[in-house]
Image (tube, rainbow, N blue to C red; front, top):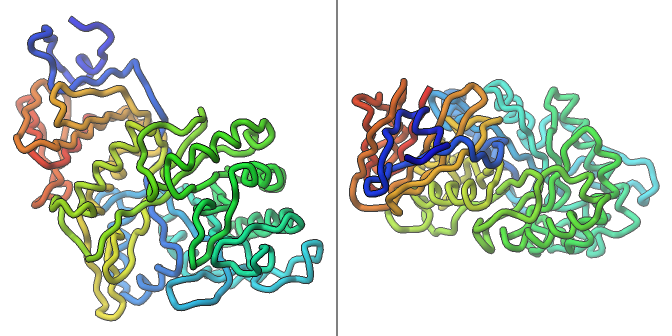
Length: 440
């Protein structure tokens, strides 16, 4: 009999001999990362699409994002710190200082409309649902602070403007504080290794580490996040540069990366919190399917979340975007012209994790005898356990021995977190499906 496998007692798994291993084993003595949460962004004026819907539809969408009974119960909202108000609609955000005040040492001339492209409204709504984590992230400094004179098309921050840019970012958090929203996490760069035609700004890993030492001392009341690299492997260089500099390491609390250029396959080289802070899959159509092999269906998202949690030890998973229009891979399609919205299975794939794995949860060691089962397990602060099982195979698998008051939630082609009480200590793990088991 294997000793130390606390889950055998917790979940009522029977003792087994080597010829008949348990289908799933959870070892509570081996604990991994603490969870900060799961979230979305609605930057780049996407909230205007939501505003175009009726009040009833707005509430339904907000419920789908933030309600723990009706929707995903998301716990992180990522906000876009504005760039210059130029370009076509839904491309750019309004800056709090669009015009050069007269130089880096001139008194700043900030402008605040209390709305911030409706981000304030959504943040207040999220707060009413219980969201406490607000991550403000800047795609670029205002153009006059950069060597290319443009908030778009890359360019780098001019050295003489570093302190002014740091003050600009802190001022943004203070404006939100006046609206009753505490910015908890602050990022100064988005994809610093990628030049985009929209708002973007380049940093090398060494330049990012240097700027952290400017921003950190003036942003003491917020957790600094860095560096939202274009890919997870690429993020390792930024993390390594910060970790190698004692002063920079002091200020950065969370290391962040995206997964466009490369997926999560290992932890970032740090003992601090790490977040997968932006990703959605490529695709050319609006897709509501669960499992169609397209690479942007719900099943794809479930696998990506699982890998980020188990291979990358991430503490948070933030999806891009919560809702957008057209052939979007957002969780929802917001059709402002037709005054309607549509829900994809991507939402329910993320919701299977976010609704039940709450901030403060700890990931536990978990394994499966069947390699087709991708398993992760968590203990929430309230003592409840959550076991996520993604059956990638084509046959159902029966797990016997669950003890206690447990509910299984099924997400597949026909189901979106459909609950069923666990009776007879048995759960059937359906093929090509995600089963979320909550034991209270």
